[in-house]
Length: 125
Image (cartoon, rainbow, N blue to C red):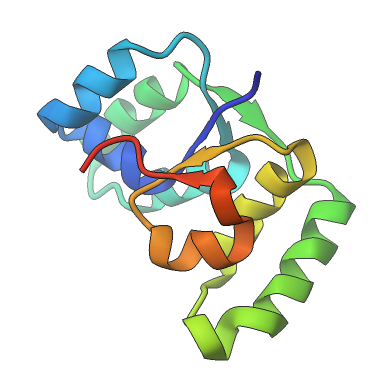
């Protein structure tokens, strides 16, 4: 079964947040989208943090977005941008989860639940 993780979970892992590490150690196979990888890299500030981000990203299986994913994201952006303030990257990440019917572990339930319903799951508090 595929399990996706959102950028905020990756950030927690990179910062060694204890609940994220405990949760992460219990997982066997995790997936990220290319958007998630890009967001983590975008948050780097120097060569050391970039190298750490790249090293962390190697631990996950990368899923590329399809044309169908992008069309779905466009529809969801139009539907939820005003009512729920859902961002473009939220829609793109959620698209791969919707296509594969795989859960997304995230701390951003406010934006992901309208997009994914019960597929948006909080791994820890």
